[in-house]
Length: 120
Length: 111
Image 1 (cartoon, chains in turn brown, cyan):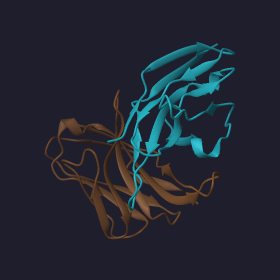
Image 2 (image 1 turned 90 degrees about the vertical axis):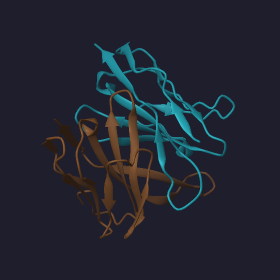
Image 3 (image 1 turned 45 degrees about the vertical axis):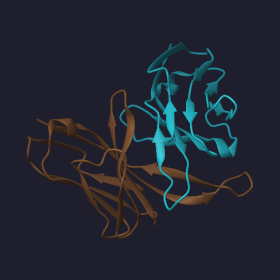
Image 4 (image 1 turned 90 degrees about the horizontal axis):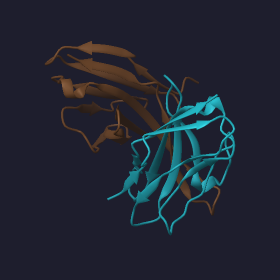
């Protein structure tokens, strides 16, 4: 059980180049998320998916596209990379579970190891 | 709109001293609060969820709805506690409960 994996771990791009980041999870989770992590700003949600074939915008979606063709995979694409997209990208997945207080559900997210992207 | 504020970007304490990482939130409904930890060059992992009322690695956090806070506490800090800590809030209904993260607090425990 590998959990959440991300490919690649590191990448350097030139402005205007394109690339795709791959996230895979083997926990049969319905929900998947892409975040970017920047110093002093925490994690910000880029896009998310509530199931195969569905995607939705998060807080900072501009410049990114996503696809969820298979339940276990969530792809993040940069069509024309810009230096402002230099960041560490984290993928996460989640499943609803029952909490300990009155059966209330909670949303615990499981994270991948991250992809460090530099755009020159 | 939901918002999470962690006022301290950096926090240093000596080994054996108490530590408190502050987290305040803004949310109109009933939130679910979490603390995530990221050790150096590792992935984020869940440390605590308020709903469980648990103690993990000696850390506890109590949700104070009156003060809209969810501070993380440990009575005796250890060097291995040095890490980045993120407070996160999950709120709202709908098909996906998104997490809103604070900006994080880098904790350094000095020997």
